[in-house]
Image (cartoon, each protein chain N blue to C red):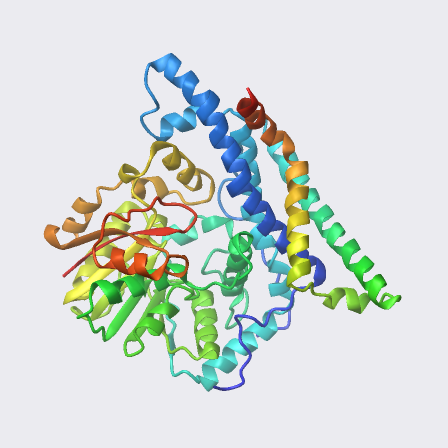
Amino acid sequence: MSDKPVHLPLRSKGKRATFYKDPAVDQLFAIITMLTQELSVAFDRIETVERLLDKNGVIKRADIEKYKPDDQEEGERTKRRDDYIGRVFNILHQEAEALLDS
Amino acid sequence: MSNIRNVGDLLDHAHDERSRQSFVSAFRKRILMDVATDMKTVYDKKVEPKFVKKHGRKPKDALEVRAAMRREPVFEGWSSMRYNAQIMTWWSVQPAVERQLNELIQAARDARDANPAGGTLELDPNVVIPREVTDLDVHHMPGCFHTEYADDDVAQGAVYHYGTQVFYGGFGKDVKPKGDVAMSIANYLKLAYPDLKPQRILDLGCTAGANTFPYKQVYPDAEVHGIDVGAPVLRFGHAWAEAEGIQMHYHQRNAETPGFPDNHFDIITSSFFFHELAVPTTKRVLKECYRMLKPGGIMLHMELPPTEVTETYYNFVLDWDGFYNNEPHYQKFRNLDFTKTLVGAGFAEDKLEMIRIPNYGSTPREEFTAVAQGDATLKREHGLGRVWFTFGGRK
């Protein structure tokens, strides 16, 4: 085996699907979704920092890397992520809500 | 037990990688529960009534539902979310696999050399990798099941194994692949056919073996064999089984030309395999199953439910994968006449099996047993893994 690092491909073989009349909208959707993910990651990181600050008073970067939430905290995080996705993508829910209200 | 490292759980994910994975799991749960419910509401309250007003009847099939829904913003949005979530599933585990690939490969070599469970791994560099796998990356997993990037490579096995955990992670805390399908079929067979004492069991298209293991657990005296065309998934699956102490026999073979003798297996099975095959391939593979099955043996494959037994709107939802998830044979498979197909493969019409098996892990034991013993009153709807459609027959 060579020690050359392996780079796995990001693009899957086959035609990329489009759902909107203008494929640029599909591209924007992909970008926004990735941004949403990254913001969720940032929330997680901030939360880890806050919790570690509470705990230690000092932050070490290595502590952040190895920090793993316990079950109860993971439950809280799961709920927070779920609520967050619900807010960002709320536009998709609004029509159904209006139909149910009418 | 030896102290070889387990490829199945040795991957370390950095803080942000875990966080991306958790996001994808949460995102998928939102899509499949909340947004899917919204989409159904829009269909029930607006789209279907509009269709009925125009045509004087309800849509007759999934394609008509699709045509009516295609330009609805909720469908475009739901689809876009689902599509991106699918791609992000694999992306969320690839960096950790890349970074620790040497460790994974070394652990797989150690498992192969130490071989503590006594399983086997037979690779064939000349195996014909079919177009079903080479034309498109199935499920948008870049590199599919077979691509190799290094000597003794296990990368695609790892991406599949860890990616699958992310994929199913949104529905529960225990996200280890636990072989729900095989657990359900194996326990069903044990209850429904108490006289069957299998010597040899074969699983087709076994990938990393999550749905092959349970046969050994339910039938500890049987030899359990798995075949797949992808070497990286088989190497990974073999190493995983050895580290878990489960004796498995993996072979790199094509299910169209599996090469095992006639009348060789007591049970032949698969999970989520046939819908990835072109229909002519499905027919050839089923003939091979009949040939390899011992008289008295049983073939039972888990699959998507056929179009004809599934409600129209649900067909539309299921068929999404056929359009957008690099699974081009999906609808044609679901539209098959299963009775005709099985009879065409050699099975006697009065010995066919087509049954919805409840999910073993989440069904009360009494209910599971009643279904296995033939109580058809407990028919459940398909969806969210509560029940598995199976088809096959006895030779």
